[in-house]
Length: 140
Image (cartoon, rainbow, N blue to C red; front, top):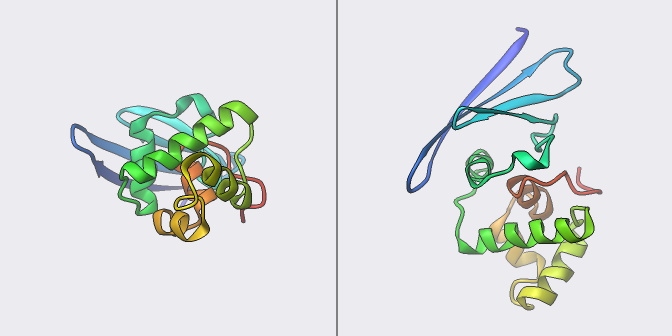
């Protein structure tokens, strides 16, 4: 089969998001997702190829794919990551994420237990994907 297609539906309070991921052989491990009729390029790990393609609809799509039900606490981390990236132009590794969240949001949120409860697949990796940022250095 030359192409695989996965269709996911995500429902938020106002919209229904239709998204599909298509990877074709020989296309340098890039794929696309389609969210609300817009085709968006992703890398082989499913992270956005172009950070400007991020939107709340894209974030909700990624959260659905990752099995995350977004809450205010999830958005707090996503917004923190987007601000951090805007300032430093890098997605933080988990160790730095924990330390910086602790400084900004307090010790009750700046610890690995809390962040893994929110993002069980890996706080840095899952939250960065949902935030539309590149895969953090050191993530496997």
